[in-house]
Image 1 (cartoon, chains in turn purple, yellow):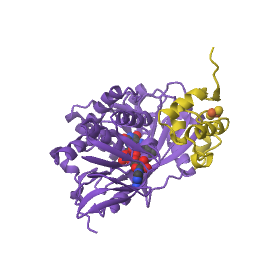
Image 2: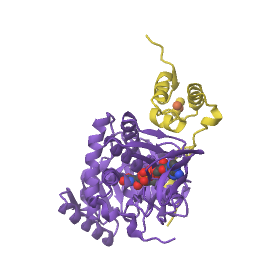
Image 3: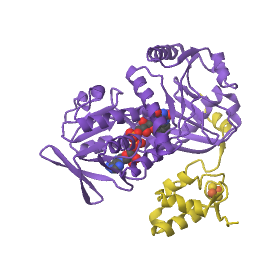
Image 4: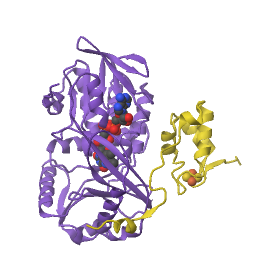
Amino acid sequence: MRVAIIGSGIAGISLAYFLARSGIDVVVFEKRYPLYGASGRSSGGITLQFDKPEFVDLAKESLKIYDRVQSEVGFNFLYRHDGYIKVARNREDLEKLEKEVRVAKTKGVKAKIIEPEDVKEFVPDFNPDAIEGASYSEGGVIFPWPVIWGFAKGCKEMGVEIKKMSEVSEIIIEKGFVKGVKVNGEVYKADYVVNAAGAWSNEVSSLAGVGLDNRIIKEEVCVSESLKPYLDPYILDVSTGVYLSQSVRGEIVGGILGSEVEKPETSSTFEFLTKYAKRASELIPKLKGLTILRQWAGVYDVAKDEIPVVGLTSVSGFIQFNGLGKFGMCIAPALAKELAILIIRGENRKIEKFSPLRLKIHH
Amino acid sequence: MKSRKIVCRCEDITEEEIIHAIEEGYDDIESLKRYTGATTGACQGKGCLMHILRILSQKTGKSPEEIGITTQRPPVNPVPFYVLAEGEKE
Ligand SMILES: Cc1cc2nc3c(=O)[nH]c(=O)nc-3n(C[C@H](O)[C@H](O)[C@H](O)COP(=O)(O)OP(=O)(O)OC[C@H]3O[C@@H](n4cnc5c(N)ncnc54)[C@H](O)[C@@H]3O)c2cc1C
Ligand code: FES
């Protein structure tokens, strides 16, 4: 059995890893380089607190996988588990956090609602007047680059070929069965082709004649000069989408949750910088003197129902691993592990609810 | 003592380290600069990008044009938060 994976973001590379570990022959095609997609541009926030119980399960399992894989491949993912704080600016958003905390608790995750004043226990310079309330849960920050490199290293050691600058331009299908892909004019045979193309997922599905109508989200981020260790937990303001955390290099990495765009593009805007700086310095007034060094943007995809799209399609051998959305780094490895089982056994009840067939898109 | 040929002064990276990374498979400019940290220091690559491109070109046999210049990420001149925060009134 031979599997061709399109895309070497967290979805593609972690799936390649699990398949290769079961002895499957895998090749990964990446149109640019492994950090080109959303995974390489992500801010690496890891939370176990979601409103959907199935996300909590996936995030718990993914965290275990990160922990295990970094020792298996001998690569430090630089995971800092100093917690994940969500703050709300109004009553309505705080109620959402209360619901998430209830869900988290039923799943055995450590999570609690805290008063605005209590945020100062974790972040001494926090301004409690900027919020209505907050939640604190297990989680933290992971550095996405070593994550991708580490999985890639493990893949290569198991004989997986990761082909950079290799855009899949055609998916070859005969009588409803996948036969392979065409890349830079060359044909590669495969029994399974996996769409792990992130924001480009709609395009790749259409190469297989399969409908997928995911939304494309662009998210902007920026990074400041380095400071001494200062900000331990990851902070997300759910009311404005503004988030920030400190990287292992000491930089403050911050962004604003993305919004929908027509097609994948990664231009940076000044408007983002001003909006981010304004809210970030309301939350932590001391940041005012800080300098922003670089900014960038990334794109990811999400299904209309905001549930990942993972599994078999109407074309035999064509598989989707898409729609990871704004918390893709938190949930992808666990989905990859289950998808590998689905590909090997032909079925896996555990990820039935993510089946692409639920979307019923007609073309 | 072995001579250390520094190619990126801001991040203190030697030619040897760059070559090692290329040999490990970080052999395109975007991966190389992220893996080694070269070009990401205070001068944002003004002092080292050309050296890195030369080494990469020698090791991979690709021309500097094929390798390409890495994307300059704005703002090129650092901007403080307070300037930005005051830039927009609600
Ligand atoms: C700015 C930003 C911040 C984020 N912060 C967080 C966070 O804090 N926590 C969190 O959990 N998630 C976060 N996310 C979301 C997370 O990064 C994504 O959900 C996740 O990375 C998606 O992974 P992926 O593998 O599906 O896609 P990608 O990482 O985008 O990978 C897809 C790859 O497919 C390649 N490709 C596309 N078409 C083709 C083709 N035809 N042939 C070959 N290759 C192709 C692309 O080049 C790309 O490398 C963030 C995202 C962004 C943009
Ligand atoms: S010399 Fe390399 S970043 Fe300045």
